[in-house]
Length: 402
Image 1 (cartoon, rainbow, N blue to C red):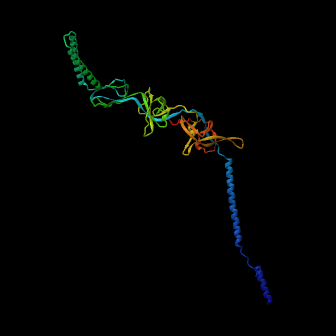
Image 2 (image 1 turned 180 degrees about the vertical axis):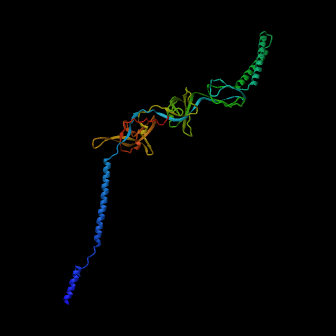
Image 3 (image 1 turned 120 degrees about the vertical axis):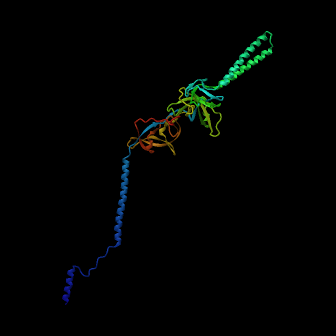
């Protein structure tokens, strides 16, 4: 029996290939898994950090080695020059001689003796009013004067021969003088019925018609002498002290762009307006071509005594902003390779008057400084620039009229 039992044990052992009493395997501990996962995450994060650092270095190196080309600009030099000392104002033109011709008395228009728009000389008849009653009175007074003259001559002859008293002569003389006074008065009334041009000038549009009854003062036609005009304008109280009679005044009008007319100050109002604190000034302008018209809006510029030389730049070089006025000054610097490069640096300045396309620089620049005249809109302070060889376009004067 024991032998059989040992055979069963051996046979079962051969079937499984392992001892029946061998212990099972142990599971892997969780700590080991945490170590493996943590190591993988650390490697991943480190790779990302290294990649970002490497990319930043590459981008920095790329931009360091690939600088944009310099911006082409037009340059101008700040100059020290004597700028005309000008005082600019606005005003209007007024004719020295201008009137609406009217009748002195009431009457009916019987004849119009002028053509609208023509030039007439002083004393030229314009309108005839009905004067038949006055013409009758004139004939009556002339007849009385004739009789009075005969009576006076006869009385003088008799008195000279001692045949008549002196009282008769005096009475005849008074009658003759009375008749002459009647003639003078009637002729004055008749002259009032014939309206004449008070001075030489150009007529405007007709405002009356034949048969129309006019009252005294009714406008018949405008008459304007265009040979000489007044330019009336105002200046501030601060500028009034620099004005004098006889100073040259230049004028510009919108009707004739590009042309400048010249005159002289003839009148300065002695009183300053308490409302506006301005003073009125009047200049006389010769108008031989008769192209200036009363009522035109004008820009006047008074030429004042010269001031010392100042620094000026083209007006297009100045950048006007809320933060202040500035220009781009072109500076030179040497690179590490020995080459010279140009850059534009924004410099704030204090500006003054603007005359004929140039700006007075009170503070911030010195004579000889090079500034960007055109092309500064696409610049930043310190940006590299190159001076363009193309001719710069003409710089317009600003303001457009002075």
